[in-house]
Image (cartoon, rainbow, N blue to C red; front, side):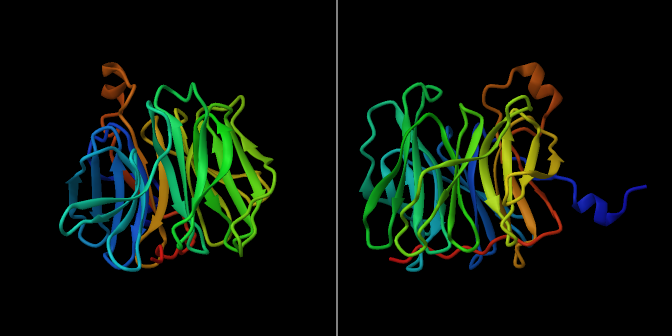
Length: 296
């Protein structure tokens, strides 16, 4: 017989939002909410950790990632570039335009422990043309950091701010780079982990306070926890095939939230995983890495 503690350690669906492409989860401590996107349906969803209320905003364009701003509202990554978004009014204002060619869209985004926002752009046709990763500093400068990458995912940093991680999903590989915590400069990439010969491809990642990476693996029905040296520490099975990303939340950052997608699944596949596209949560027994708001 399972116990309540056992049940909390298993992923459970907390919001049946049926997202076509759920992505970009992040915790807003001031509001006690987990936010995430349905990219292809142009939605920003939220879930209240206490009480379980669910809501959503309609967006005028596709968006995929965000971070709370110290001045209020969100710094949001959209297909037009980086924007200021005010949930109270629904006002979306472009602050840094995206220079990508037609047919590209925003993908991954995260804020690091020093308060810099890292963001990526990918070819919307399955990454046939290379995308890139940029770093956006609080002063308003955006710098290209990773060039010629097919589907840039993961974008994470270590708790000490000295290692930057990213994934190329087409290559089924995760990479690590030395990160200058003061300037945001990164060194050459080195192999960190991969899914060759394993189910799924690396997608979005959350880092815990011990420096372990929790990676959602598209097509793999699983979340994988990697140690700082790249070895697999734990595998958590998911009830859906396409987990997309994850983020720690809750007042003590002890809940791992996982987004998922219905996109590209057949009717028969959806019948076998009716919760696909929902938001999931479980308590992994570790504490998440606290991240700052974007200062502007």
